[in-house]
Image (cartoon, rainbow, N blue to C red; front, top):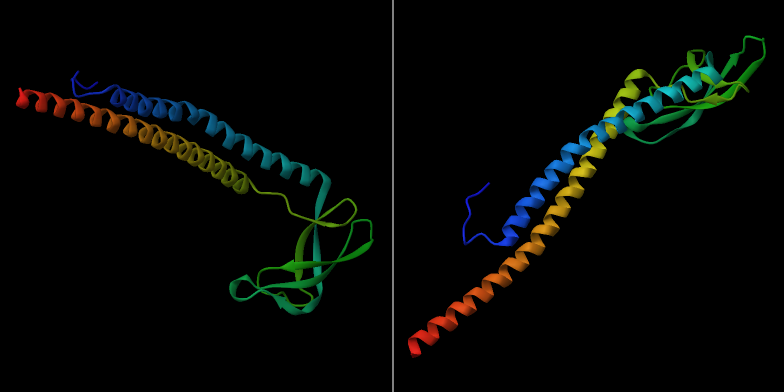
Amino acid sequence: MPRPSSLRRSSDRWETAAGWTALAVLLLLVPVVLALGSARAQQVRDDAAHIRATSHQVQATVTALSERSVGEGSGVSQVVTVGWTEPDGSTHSAQRVVYDDPPAVGSPHPMWVDRSSQPTAPPSTEQDAVLQGWVADVGAFTATLVALLAGLALVRWTLDRRRLRGWDEDWLAFRRRRDRGAAG
């Protein structure tokens, strides 16, 4: 705590208190932010488990390539037609967008399909769950920090305005006393 001083105004004390309060709030929210990230990671794991329970992986084969590519540079994708056989012997085909190097006709193309043999997104990996948990942690912490800093800036701006008004009033009072003393 700073030493008591007649130059220290109440706005200075409020500013110090606001800074300490913001720091305390930030520290108290750390467990909440970590819980948010853990919940997001668990949600990704649960979604992946649901996909594994309602879908299965098939080894499809590329049967045709589209004539056109979509995009330019490293973001080029190509539509391919793939075919696969289910364990019950039924054959299926679908069009898929491939973002890597275009595969050759006849090359294998692993993919996930649901119970009605419609292509679906593959389940997330454990690394995906951890990454999304960390992203949620960092995003929530950053949002909290930005909100607290914005609040502190608003408090400081308000207190600076009050402090400047007080200084103007003090200078005006000083000048009046000085002018009265000189005039006698």
